[in-house]
Picture (cartoon, rainbow, N blue to C red):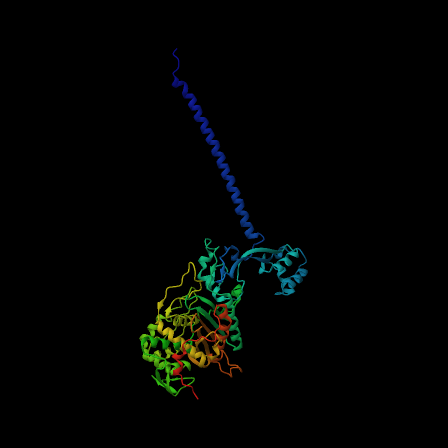
Length: 567
């Protein structure tokens, strides 16, 4: 018999190995499937447990605060690094009525002493409530948290949650704004820079504002004092660096506490400085004179105009508070705030040139600033010859106080308009490129004219000895029910200091001030806005590095020879 071939001998071995591999794969497949089934069962149990806790657990029915899930926001600081807004880990006190183990009547007595916003009866009603969870206090003080914890009641819950805190309370509140319930910016710089403040990549770098906290505090204090003293319904104030456009301080009254913005009156949340538009009256007159000078119509402060006691034009009579009844110079027109004289200067310039200048000054567009809360200028639809005259003395055009402040900055910084900013100028934020609105010569000549208003005219009470204040009063009748009121006014003072070398522009405005015994019943700007301006300058000038000097003045020889002393 022949021996078997090698191929016939090896074949059974290969078959046996193939069978073993199939058996191993089958076992692995069974184990894998079993593992997947176990994993799926575990996941199902976890999900089911979470759903059960959500529906029937301790927090069932609890109105979760969305701020609990908000990531921390970046800090906001003033120009010197002082914190104005930051996110903190705050304590929250809650109640699970069903989990209260102690005597509820006794607990109600203790809670009423610790949190007196509810009396004992109200606390007892809460403790006996069928609700699963009730918030008792957000952003609770550490001392209160410690006292609640000392009660040892398991039905009282203490938790931590991120919360936006404004440590200076109402300081610069309308600049900062506030956040909404989901932690996003709802107003002010919080809203304008919401994306940057929420971005994890920049959260460690604070948003640095142009605001000077000390200057801001002084402006707010003096303006609040004036609002109270003259029983005004509101007020606004702005302080600008005229060379950089930086807003050093800006406020709006009534006051706003951004920590409780949702509970504040809408009137307090309204930003009068950037959102409200007002006819600001005679504060517009310097622009009319400067426009006429640039246009070549006014060639000197001694140029003469006829200033009768009443000017009748286009079916309307224009009057003056201090009528001349004679020929008067440009210097006298500004000194006594003559509507009649200014109207004639505006008429010479003409509507086309007036609109061009106002456009260059930014008055006809929303104010350029980072905030979203911006008012829209109200200007004549039909820019008639009469409208040209009335706009010339600030009647028939309504702008924001920030518009006006930037207008004075432009007028006295050499004639360059540039946007205002609430961000500190420095590395990463340069001075904005501007555009020429007035000639440098006109800018220089206006110094003595506005200083004259304070030394000899309607703005005497705005003077701050040694700081060479220059500016203009403005009293405008308020439009109520479509008609101008003869008794309800908006008063303002817009000015610059020190006028021999201008550095800062400021506007203060009072909404519906009342006369007092001290003002002999007068409610005009010279009696309320002007003295408020002077008080603010006296306080803030040293903070801003402006030294008092009684020997320095702008060149008053350009205006004084053209002022006739009335007997």
